[in-house]
Length: 348
Image (cartoon, rainbow, N blue to C red; front, side, top):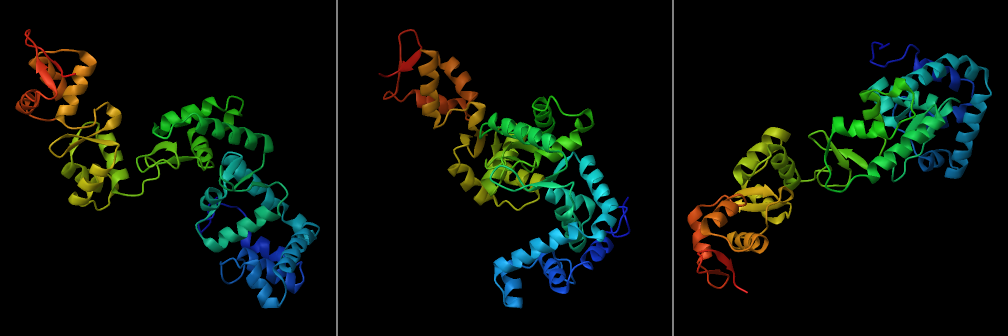
């Protein structure tokens, strides 16, 4: 149930936390308020800053914090908060049983102070376990250890099956993920939960077009014009003039793309192939790198001697040029020769 302040709880987190803190001595209470941002300011204060305030070491502050949390778990106020803990447990279970900390807090409320109070209850409550953030996963909370392990293993398998160039539509990515989770409960077999689980992984990421792939790939972690150009041309599906690429970037991603800058980035990026005057295609589409002469050489190298007409037909599939440009290149006797049968071949 959403309250007037937007949080999706039937209890009052701030009121629950206030009652809990009142069970502590003043210094323990103020240390927890500062550490978790439970006071007038939502800013969380470091151990070192609190230590300077009281003239004690950061390790001593840590001891006070840990002792205060342990004392609260033994207090009558902790038992009185059981209803709040149970509701938080239901919310986490409803979100999939394991959920990124940011997703969980943002789901419940956008208010930073309120998020701090909910986070404090998560740290204090017995049903909640957290998966520490590392190189593979984001910090997350769970209430079912077996399920959490299944999800994490499935994410690892999913990541292992991707190459750096892969871009998978979200629907297909969800289907692949589900195949890695054969034994999960039916209540978790829905797209919303699966998408939420995907966000747990640091190895996987989603680009501005909603396609999934390795998070570190420039196709996913778009940093500049060349990455947005790649996505724009890929989405378009056929070669584009650099002016059109710049316009498409602005239209698709709502960001400024100067024509000259776009052209310069396309020239420098080996994911693109110049296929005509100012026209660029993606190398992954099978286009040959190089000038028209290089394309002709590749055509003859793979197909053997050919007539002028056959060469023109094949080269025009690779380059947006006039047939006359191809004919002029064929006349370069350093590279090509014409046989008595009228077919052209490579000069050895």
